[in-house]
Image (cartoon, rainbow, N blue to C red):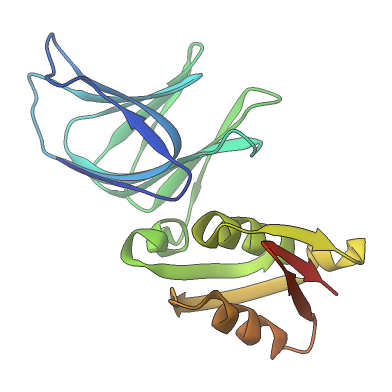
Length: 191
């Protein structure tokens, strides 16, 4: 099995899997390519969710500062469970667990929008600038300050390869004419 970790993410696992399961614990975001082993199911713990797999490819986004945990299935099947409720995902679907109301919803999605980061792509479809810059901040390690609150909700769509130079990404966003950026030390000021 192979696991890809996104920025600001942590995977905890034993040196050797013993017992009846291959159990790991995730904080942040990861993409899993799990080899099938019917005798030892693969389990991802993302409190309070338990994601069980036999053999599949899927992504889990579980950053502590975000209100939802998202499990996105590319291939195979996974079971997503929390406190007595659960769903089985089919390919191209996503389970969203809302931490505040403990609700689990499932919908069809464009999987690339949620796992493009694994291949070094920045993919956003009509996302608020606040979400775009939060994700970019994880990749490029910067903070954001907004001069006008309404700029947080300006929608953007991007599908580009991650650039070596972060300024190139900001220049692409500025070309829309919707925002301007100023960089002070490790902080991006949105104007």
